[in-house]
Structures are given as C-alpha cells and as structure tokens.
Length: 582
Image 1 (cartoon, helix red, strand yellow):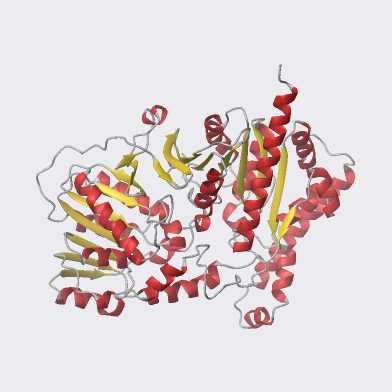
Image 2 (cartoon, rainbow, N blue to C red):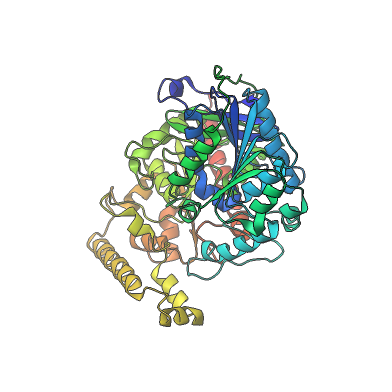
C-alpha cells in the first residue's frame, strides 16, 4: 500500500475528505470512516467515467461523510493507474478484488459493499461472484461485453466527430470510443464477457437501479440474493459530457440509504493510512500532490535530461488531469522516459481539486492563473517550464506565457480565443461545438446533412445566428487591424512580439476546420507566411482529426511537436548558460 504525501499548506486549509493512495499499481482516493461497513466504488470505463468524474467523487464524499470508509480507484490502463501486463476483463476484476483487500486490511472494513456504474456494474458483479461481498449495487449495468461494445459504437458517432461534423475516422480493428482506444486484447475479452455464463453472485442484498439487462435481477434472485430494483433518474445527464454532467442526487440518496441499512452498530475510530512510496513504472515515478485547493501528479524521470524544461499540463475543459482518452497520462510517462519531468494538475472545479467558490467551472477564468503559479514554483529548477493545453487549457497557457517569464514555451492546441469577455455566456458560446464557417460549409456539402435539414433535424436559424455573430466579430477585428497599422503592446500581436523579445516561444496547433483559426487570421494575419513571421515558426494544422486530437496520427504528431519544442528550449537554455559561464 502506498500513500502519496499531502502538503502542509493544503492540510491547513479546507478539510480533506479523501487522501490519495496507490496499491497493486492502482491509484485511488480513500476516505476514512467509523463504520465497519466499507464501500468500493467501481467506476465505468473511458469517456463515461470522465463525464461522471466529479459526481462520482461527490458520491464517495457523501459515503465518507455518512461514516463509511470509501475507496474509489482507477482501473489498470485508465486514469493514473499503471498499465496491466495483459489488458483484459480479468485484469479489471482483479483490480476490484485488490481494492476490496485494501479496504479490509488498511481501512479496517469488516463488511464490503461494491457499487458499480455501467460497465463497472458488470465488473462488480463478476468480482462478487468470487464471494466475500456483503452488498452489491448495480447502476445500469450491462449483461454482456458485446452489449457494452454495441452501445459505445453507437454513442461514438455523436461523441467523436471532426470539426466539420463528419464522423471520426474509425478502424474496425481498433475502434475509438470517446477518445479511448481499447487494445485488441480488451476488445476480445469484452466480446467474451457474459454475466449469464457465470453463477449468480452469492450476495445477500442487491440494489439494481436502471434497466434490468437480460433479466439479471431474476437470475440474482434465483441465486439466493434479495434484489431491490428501481429506476435511475438522471443517468443520461450524468454520463453525457463532463462539461454539463449533473449529479443524480435522487439515485445517490437511494444508494446512501441502501449502504447504511443494517450496517454494524459497533463504531470504531477512523483508520488512518500510513504514508509510503510513490507509484513507479518503466522509466517514471509518480507522486500525487495536493497544493492549495488543487490536486496533481508529478511524473519524474529516472534520469533527467540536462537543461530540459519541465512540462505543465493544463486541463482541457473540465476533463480530469489524465486527459481526454487518457492522453495526458500516457504523454507524461513517455516524456519521463525521455528525461522530462512533468506535472498534470486539476484546476479548481475539475477532477480531484476543490470546487471554485462560485461553483462555476474554471474555463476562460483568468483567476485560475493564481492556482497555476504555485505549480510552476514546483517545476522550475532554473531550466524553465513548457506549458501545454487544448482549447481552454490553451487559453490559460497563452496568458501564463504572457505573464510569467519562467514559462519559456507554450504548445497550444485548438485555441478558441486569445481573450475572453467575462460577460459572454460560456454555455451558449461553446454549444456550437467550436465549428467555424468553413466547417459549416463543408458540413452542408454532405448529402446526408441536407436530408437532416429537410427532416427538421438541423436548426438552420441557430446556425445562421452563429455565423452572423462570427461575421460581425471578424468585421470588427478586421476594421481594428486596418486602423491600427502597428500592433499596440496590449494587442495579441503585440503580446506575441513581447514573448519573442524575451526569448519565449509559442507553438500553435489546430485541427483543420477549428473555429479558433478565425482568431489567428484576425489577430496574427490571414496568410501562413504572416502568421509564421509573427510566431517565429509555422502554425501547424492537422487534417482529419477531431477537436480533442484523438486520432492516432494527431497524437503522434503532438508528441513530435512537444519533443521538438522541448529540445529547442533546452538548447536555448544551454546556450544561455554557456554564454554566462564564468
């Protein structure tokens, strides 16, 4: 068992409802309680778990607040956990059993409740069939892995799209679900998973909320379980998208009542977890940290490369620090293998960090700069810091590069805007899926799009209003550019020039068709040559990829761009040190 250290600065602030732990290569969060009945939360997989992340954390906090020791964790190959030797269903079920063992041995729980969400419910039922589980809560589970694959295949058509609305390019042999690319061994294992093929779980009490897949409740009753069934109100809004996810309070209240019913009456003092070593893998060591109200993971290389800047990963939207499709975790570990230290952090309101005082998400809020500067304090050892982020993370990264000289380089992808008007309605502005006029034009060249228009499935009025707004904004920007022959210090071009004068560098990367390309044209020039001259290097536009850069080709290109930017920054640091030696 391993516990990541907690900073004294954080311990003196808001009380901690859970502490980070690692066990058997897994990363999790443990909340101590006085009840002898403990709870293991078995989350779902991939995109659905990212959407549910904050609500799932809320459920864990509520269970802990009710006195039950509670553990939530990342499966192997997901979130911040290590990769399994073989990625299959058995590895995920073993992870649940490891969590149960942790809760018994370290948390002192005498009774165990498994709570499984969606495919996590399927996994919890499989783990319970091995015995030793006292209560089982299944939240809209799947009876088979094939049913899960079918639903994810259908959902990905709406989730994974190119900026112009075309479907995400899929390889049938290696499908991508909401940015997640399960390995072939996991796909094969999913296809073979069937709860009906195993004996019913020998669990005394079962709660099943949501649809009853393939008569699962009846099979559990036939096996001797007392089964309570009911609806799961709010399931769709809970899992639809991290930005708009709503906590299903009614269902959570029923879960809390079921866990508490008949719990042992002999309370004990909450069992604390002793500290131990960080999580390690091939070429990297990771430590979970808390600082201020933020959570993050420092990924340290076994052997640091000389003069190399550290990397700070910023949240994209409200995706937790592991990133969309787990891109950030994978990238941090790849960089560590090249000698680069990094920190992937959650801003307040995201992942495992505290809520913002006003309860809003941190998107396009410059007060988040105050949270990020302590992270830079941790990373900068004199070689500077490279910041990188997508969309709203790119927005924050640009302002960090403008305001903190320790940030030497920023690699910014799919920047939506350079500056944000606080009076703008965030939800309304981001609702059109970041599409540019060119993207809409491309969309309407598709025959299927016109069929959707004729069927009334496309809101032409909303698109027209969106395009009119973009056109008016660009007209104003173009007029300002004409009237202002030379950029002022406060303009975007002026700030980019100031960054370059102090030796900083900015690398811009876009998916083809992104709305943010209009910002570049308005502020830095309409020709590629003008933009390259102002940036000091060409802007990169990646074809045939989505807003989250989920295609394999885009991810490979991002890795190349980051490594090149790191090497260039390190070379500049080395030249500076040599010129000032002695």
